[in-house]
Length: 407
Image 1 (cartoon, rainbow, N blue to C red):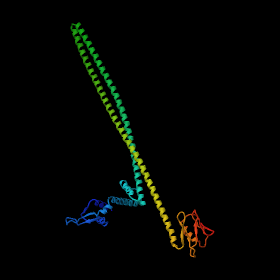
Image 2 (tube, rainbow, N blue to C red; image 1 turned 90 degrees about the vertical axis):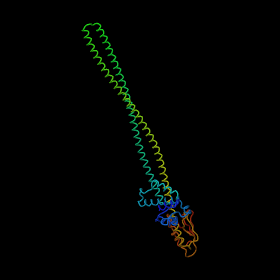
Image 3 (cartoon, rainbow, N blue to C red; image 1 turned 45 degrees about the vertical axis):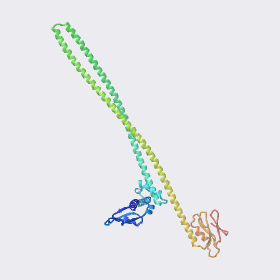
């Protein structure tokens, strides 16, 4: 039937060419809503036909809105049947868009059955429970993400602290390298001063000595001076290399400190962004929880209304059955009574009677009429017929024309 509705829905806007008349098209034709036209086929060798809506009167009353309502009824009926066959298992309740369609369909219906109302309410409750479970899971994931963000923030702070420590170490190493360089420079100047002093001494010796011994001594002294100068130069080069190495190491440490500081800032920024996202998600989750609670309250309200309507319908049905029983009592003896008296609750109990020998006694009348009323006991002592009877204002006693009463 759903396929028939889909096919009819297509015919509301377009004529459909069919190559052969299948069973579903034949059933549609039997409904009187469509026609199958084989007269307008141009090629006589073709065996197809045109399927179209019967006329505008049908399409006006049975329009797309009508199709959607009927589709909703069929979908709800099929799902309800599966749910009942599964002994009302939750796996066969409506979910997502199917539930929303059922709710929309319910709004368009003036009356729905108790089973349909129970099925929709159970589906709403199951959907509410599912959404609440999802919200709890999202809350748990958000808490884990927040813990992770806090951990990353702590790591970023630690990296920042290490970067600052490395920066201090680099500054200290740079100062030490500068001190080493100054020491090397001072030592070089001291050695140059010694060389100058030795040179002056050599000049003095050359000026005083004119003999071969002086020449030999001068040669030895010159050799010693040259050797000393070479050693000083090598020592100076070594000190310079050490100073350069210390400077390079200090620069490397300084660069590492800057890189670590920049990385720490980036980590801290990412942690702050993550914390902001988590806070927004928390706000969204809180709003969804409030909406879910409101939806759950509305579902409970609808359920209470449905139960009240079912109870009222049951009470009305019982009242109908009781009234039918009392009507049968009067219909069995139509010639016995002139007029009918009622209790304040609406129960028919007694009537005025004709004066003839065939009229039954009040005892018989009360035994038949008071029987459906709970809480009343008839204490009758009349053996003869009674001409008339009246109810007391509180509807608890029947007063007869004799000295005794019937309760």
